Image (tube, rainbow, N blue to C red):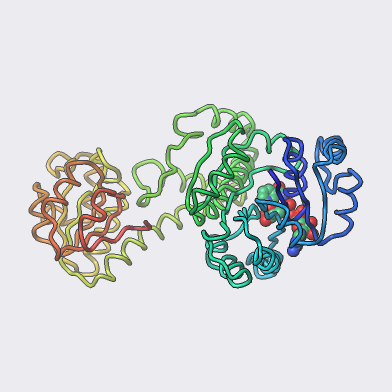
Length: 438
Ligand SMILES: NC(=O)c1ccc[n+]([C@@H]2O[C@H](COP(=O)([O-])OP(=O)(O)OC[C@H]3O[C@@H](n4cnc5c(N)ncnc54)[C@H](O)[C@@H]3O)[C@@H](O)[C@H]2O)c1
């Protein structure tokens, strides 16, 4: 293919070299003349393992050229990969000035182009940038419409500096955010041979994914480092601990606990986090990330409360009370916290939980609920239908087919549903649906 690459930094230069190595004709564009001269001479503009040899080889192949002329580069290519920098501005926002300036030039460059052109943004951009910010600029400057004459895509780049050629060849996956089969087909031709899954999603989800992956990496590093600080203070070998943590592929290094939902609770996580923070305080170890978790969890409960109160409804039915589906354990259940708050606000509450039968509760579980919601016995109903029929607002805190069937069968147009359990089959069926954060 004939390709153009805009921005010849770490991402752009490595992509240029690898794509030319794979047989494509690549035109490199940058505003820094020094980078263009280096590439013209077959030298690498970035320090990366393997780049010296690769740049020399691809320059000698005749498949690489460089220019500062945007219109010529776009005119002589069918796909443009945009890899300009998006650093932090002083206030923490993303400085998109390079992408904005370039979008203007790219739009002007396709004004008179007769062949369709695909613009693939590979720079990290905050969600909404491609469709809400860059698309209007390109449409205005070109006089054409996205999908008619040109196609915009966002394809996050996952290479890491230091191992970027290896990462280019073995990415974790290829994700293309696009609205157009033409562009998806072109990117499949270009990257479909890589030994990884190829996923197509919306442009915004692809933009969000890139931020999310980097945040997750930062979170993991900080988790290991905070664990190490506390372990070291306690005379425990942090490497031994983290190596063992990583050996659990069922609950630790796995998709477990990575699905959005309602707040966590139960008899283990909150108390053990508190014990960890107390231990850290005793040893003068600062753990701001772990220390922030319970507050973030509390804010999730606050969000549910906000949704409920903002409906203005007074007769509330709650499906679920225990801390997760399939248990009767009420200790530190975030649904109990919610129930407490709703009762405190004077709302009429009825509760149904298939697993919770007050007469059968024992020990710590019993004393927890007696302490937090002393008159819970008056609120609990054994029949889900009774709760649905006697409420204007239904809080669904439990997942499962039986709950979903009952809600779909009994909920009327007068009901508002606040869904804390991501009941996908309920959404769309009931008219007044409020998802927690979906
Ligand atoms: N560095 C990484 O490991 C990495 C990995 C994945 C994604 N990213 C993202 O990719 C993007 C590029 O990162 P980088 O590290 O390669 O940046 P970089 O700063 O090394 O390179 C950016 C290049 O863009 C050029 N440029 C600026 N305006 C231009 C214009 N109008 N036309 C042509 N070129 C222009 C600059 O001169 C520079 O050479 C960023 O959004 C970054 O967040 C980086």
